[in-house]
Amino acid sequence: MRHPKLIIAGVGLAAVAAVGGVTAAAATGGSYAGYSTTGHSATVATVRTASATVAGKTETILVNSGGLPLYYYQPDTAAKSLVTGGLAALWPPLTSAAPTAAGASGKLTVVNDAHGHQVAYNGHLLYTFVSDHPGQVTGQGVQNFFVATPGLAPIASSPAPAGMVPATPSAHGYGW
Image (cartoon, rainbow, N blue to C red; front, top):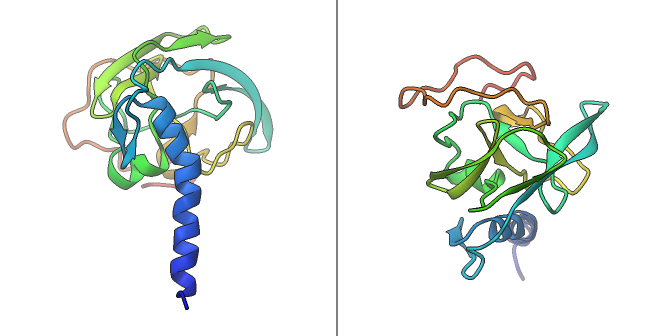
C-alpha cells in the first residue's frame, strides 16, 4: 500500500507540472525547472490587457497569450531577475526573443538573464503564478509579487547593488 502523503505529494507535483510546467515550457526555449522545452526557442510571447478582479476591485491587468495574469517582482531591477530556485518554480518567468504587445501602450523589452530572454514591461520583468488560471488573480502581494497593469510606472535601468533586497514588508504584509 502506498503512503497517503506520498500520493498527495505526487498529485501536488503533477498539478504544479501541469500548470507551471506548461507555462514554463511554452514560454522558455530550453530547459527550465527540469522541464524540457526543446523546439520552442522561437516562441513569441504576447502581452495583452484583460479585466480581472484584484483585491476585490475590477482592474485592467496585463496577461500572457494564454490569459494568465502577469506579475512583477518588486526587488528585481530592470537588468536582473532575483527570482531563482524554488521561487522561480512558483513564479515562472515570461520569456520570448520577440514579444509583442496588444492593447498595452508601455515599452516591451527583452532582458537576457539566467532565465533566457525574459520579457519586461516598462522595465519590470514579468512572471506568471502557478496557482493562477486565466482570469483569476491569486498572487497579488504574495512574496513581493504584484499584478502588472498597463499603467505600470517605468523603473530605472541601473541595477541595484548585488545582494540588495528591500527589507521593508509590502503593503500586503508579505516581507519575503
